[in-house]
Amino acid sequence: MEHNLPQRGSAKPLGREEASPREKKVFVKTYGCQMNVYDSQRMADALAADGFRPADTIEEADLVLLNTCHIREKAAEKVYSELGRIRLLKEERAKRGQETVIGVAGCVAQAEGREILRRAPVVDLVIGPQTYHRLPAVVQRAKAGEKIVETEYAIEDKFEHLPAPERRVVKSRGVTAFLTVQEGCDKFCTFCVVPYTRGAEVSRSVAQIVAEAERLADAGVREVTLLGQNVNAWHGEGPDGSEWGLGRLLFRLAEIPGLDRLRYTTSHPRDMDDELIAAHRDLGKLMPYLHLPVQAGSDRILKAMNRKHTASDYLSLIERIRKARPDIALSGDFIVGFPGETDADFEDTMRLVREVTYAQAFSFKYSPRPGTPGAEMDAQVPDKVKDERLQRLQALLAEQSRAFAESLVGVEIDLLLEKPGREPGQLVGRSPWLQPVIVDANAGRIGDIVPVKVLRAGTNSLFAERKVMSIKDNAMGVRV
Ligand code: 5AD
Ligand code: SF4
Image (cartoon, rainbow, N blue to C red; front, side, top):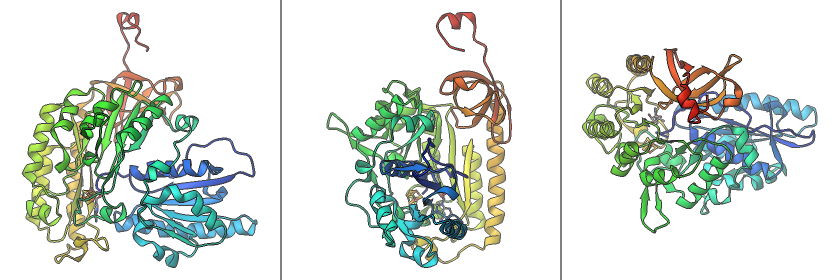
């Protein structure tokens, strides 16, 4: 999915709690984007209502779910190698008389369906992203020995049926949270599987979203990131009966007490409307960071990609956004080696990157995906050429994000303290521009937003010191 930043190594057990020895346990391993991270949590919530507790390790799980990503070939292949390891694990457990149900969820499940059972007979159930609310029932049937493929698009709204997480579970998940507001995509970029795996664009209702955001705030969450494959295409009917877009929704969410930071990801340039740009101008709670993928800098390639915008459309949009919010940091996604991409086309991408200057960006070699128009196109680019282009592009992007980080040295920023750092006495938070920031502070301060001064920029994070407040500030009740 275009729009979701890759999450690396997120195989953590979800919301661990105390468990009695005979409790059923589930281990969810998440691949791919933030949407999958969110879905994994909701699956865990649905299963918790059915008596499943999160397992600390995959070995002790009675139910293993792989929540998969199909965006590039490599991502999909990872699933099969993991299933090879899981087969051995299931055999080991069987020797000890323990039953294990293995499920594949997510976009590989949706795209490959029954083929998964053929390639990996160890799998008991395959379930697509639109049917997670049926998971407890499906698991019951799998335990009774049935092999199940559940990939029909559900007529009912999965979010209406997925239970809300308990307050203590939300609390254990921390002070930042994802909230899916929109799923699916109608854009059909010719390289992308998302319209096939996640289906047509669907928006959740204002009431559902506001209720979930209020529940999160009530459980101590201070920063919410709204998610959608095409999040800025979100629309819904407001309480006044008028049609709302994402900008209006952000204004509404900013009214919720306790929610101090809002973000959204990820967006399509075509759907950045005036109200959303105004939200960046007027809402202090909306963080000055925007992931706005362009994919390529050549109009010929953008057309072949069916992106529905030109390079200059994108550049003038960036100009408008920067005018509204001068300190906004931009992030993007790029594909090199799309079919037909010449050296000159690639140079257009390099030029666009130089013109925009990104704070951060993700870049990939084009990976032909079965069933997408791009995979059928002539003039596929040789892998060696893709490698060279990717290297050059990544060097430029790395230089830009390094320069951005360096530009913050000496700057004072507000930091939301999120979790313990690697060293004792350290906490890690995120800058307004999403960089991890490390600072000395004690764990009791997690959830606080504190002023810090950036001391230096490391490879992937910033190091900062707490700003000493003046006596006057303290007298005004500012906690240090
Ligand atoms: N090959 C390479 N990269 C892809 N992406 C999406 N589909 C493909 C593909 N077939 C990239 C896009 C998208 C990001 C999440 O993944 O850049 O924005
Ligand atoms: Fe994003 Fe295009 Fe894929 Fe839709 S089809 S998810 S707009 S890359």
